[in-house]
Length: 612
Image 1 (cartoon, one colour):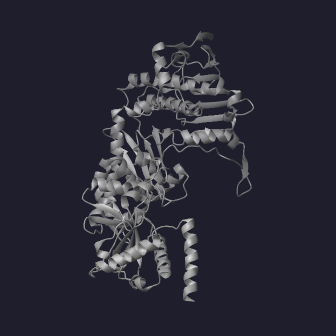
Image 2 (cartoon, rainbow, N blue to C red; image 1 turned 180 degrees about the horizontal axis):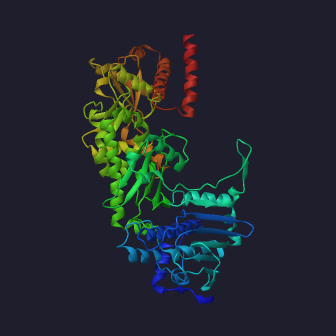
């Protein structure tokens, strides 16, 4: 038998090709060809299950062979194979969906068709992205079938002839083009199989003959050939029921899937059958950088076939800080972003995942509070980011958000230490140490908000909790820090005049106050709003244009003995002391600029000269 013909490209099927199958990455062709092999095996098993085919007991298997000398890449399966008529129907008529027809034909006979991925004819042609020509050798499972050979150079011409295959199944041989010879590198193919096919449902072997040719000695000195090992895990953990999985199982799978040597903090096992089919595991990783939001990795699968990482239409953006796998057969393998954005079922999946995460966190807060607190510093950036991005998520978790205080305790928002309607916070415990000491000495507490995400979260909280104002510890002087001493207006005015004359800085506001911390000559305060604007602008690299000058106020402590002695000093000494007091106040609030540091050192030497 030999037949030549023209590949039929039906105009009505051109548009799905253009819309859904213009691959941005050439290496995805391997996923398509191996996925087709899985489909062929799945179809055969389905037919055996309903009695339309006889199970010969041969274990399902896919082999991928790289032959650098022959410049070929071959994918073989032992699925149901094809007859000559089926080759012409499913291969030469591009975009004809063999999987759809198969399911339609057998939908009332078997419930086990969910693993058929689809669109064989179209996926097969992705092989031409890397090949000069492609051959198919196939033998149908049907009794009396003859082997078939098909070859085409990617034009509309093909040749169909008698084949030589002796066992059911299909072999696709790709003759790799010269400019795509990277796909003749065995390690490159292994990497692609691990990326796209790591969890496909049937064992995949890469160049198994290479392993079988390796001979080693056993303990008795006898020759032993190395058994080939599949490159994939056919039963990933997410397929099991949560009750069947141990903590060690989850940790081992995390290492396998993400090559992360650090153990995850905890995880959420998703196992949904209704109203849609969804399985997966989401891991909360340990944050290695306590100041930055570390990116995560959510791998999306369809029937164990990898689709892509971090598709925000399926997995909410804030969950991208996690690591995990989501397997949703309801999402087609030939997925497009526009399809996902406009699909109502996908939106439901996204909302369900968000709810499950919130439920898990709430359960931990109530039932394992000690562990929850121990995890808080690592999971806080994720939760805060989620609240900012999804207000419904905030509504679900607002009562379990924790705030660590400078006294080392964890408080909910309702229990945070307040002064009136204000919650004072710290962004840098070392830089703001002086203010923290003042708070502690006076029995006051404040919360620590030192992560990058807190720049946004503080404003978000004020928006959501409108009755509460958040104030950085160095932005405002709380009444609890002031002493009960009665002010002396004449004396206070004199002190102000001394400082104004000595500092000669019109931009710096001078105030006097009697503080409980009598050993502190003065403190520097920054306007909360202006400082926030500056912090936000720095965070976004000046996106909002020039930042406003931060308004600073020097609060001079009239209860301090040095301040009290200023009027009796000589004018030169007063000037020297006032400038040194400002330097000390600045150091307690922020870093000195280069010029400020130079002047501070010079004045310090001058003071030492006076007291020597």
